[in-house]
Length: 618
Image (cartoon, rainbow, N blue to C red):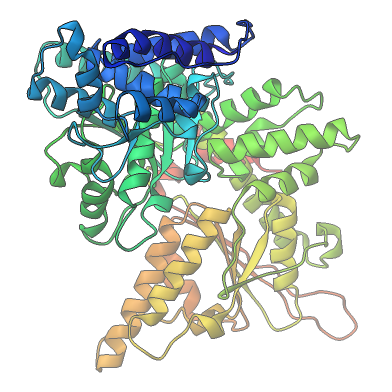
């Protein structure tokens, strides 16, 4: 006999003396001995939780007990109908049964009991029924009372519960963030106890995709000892009319049963105010007040505060720096027990991955190592691209890789230029972070490379080799899908290209770049003005792009060079034509431009940038 059955028998045993004045007999139940199993103590604690929620209200407790008894022993319903003329359990019928024991029949008390029971028992219609509404204990409530933790089927794929007993890996990067969130929660709790908060608090945790918003909340919750019920707001908001009322009632009841905090995730920014208003109207406001704050995990552009009267606290997660990514790579590497030696600085400089993606990649590497696979640069690259979202877009096409620098027949000066590009990308942590140039050069750190030369001189091959050395996937921009005759459409499609490349951490290759990079000329006609706008936009977008952009042109004196002269860091390499009888020839005329601040910057120890450059260049 489980504790739930024992509780139902106790309710029936207490019911029989109440029905005796009305001629009620005994309810014959099978004789069974209580058996204390592993769930006995859990079930006992959960029944105590229900008594705490009902605040000891006699009518509410009896109505709850009768619903449990009817579900566990269906013959109880026949017994109530025959001996007490009760067709359905209600708060009013429970109060009538208690009337013989001196229960004070007060409608306001019954309404209060009905509201409390509306959190637990399934009722028809409103989640806050009156005291005449029929009550029923559904299978999920009985399972929870018996010690089960399985969420209702209606919430499958929408909700997930985090228990404070679940194991968590350490907070590898910026360990002060959980302490800051805990401090904010303690301040809110103190304000609530002092009566300074009304209507419940809302904490909005913002950050980019995979920044660790939910993990931060889990870490803080585990340290404070409370659980979190995560609900996917994107799935809830799929119907145009929003989630149904019964679904929200199930979510609220799960949070109430466990005493968990409720967290909505998957909220992204919108172009207008309709998305936050719709979320508030359809999801947040119908839930009412909870014992704990409501958390929202959103991207930085989701504006909630202007549209709600709730006390809202915004907690921003800044983007990961290279130092953070190094700490994450090293932390996950040790956490998953990889034996191979990892080049964490290189990984952090090459792959601009989020904490979630780094964790997935290292976990995949650990599986491969246990299977006997070597963990080398190619394996790390493959694991990273398995964790990253694929660059699925009809506007960019992946270019197969397989060549090495030895396969490229060019003069040594051009090859040295390619090595300089790789060095710049791989030594970013040393230059920007260790040498302190990040503060002097806060934006526009994109690396742009222009290849110029006749067809067949190796421009595409050089782009392929650069991607192979850096361990990045190479994607060629399909200009037929980007350039559009309508004004403004080309810029929109280019923005989609760069957005896809940033999410997938790929190397962009613009072949025949002179078709979209033109000379910005004087405005003599309307077309000149819009052409200048397009060129200016793409140059600005390249400057903002935190990655590597390769451009190729067949023209010797192309305006693309002059257009790119304003880029923050760019190289221009001329690919010599191939004279008859020679594999490669012609003088090498590489041009390398850098901003004046870099050239004149004084580095730690008094050395110049030129001297330091010679030390780090291969």
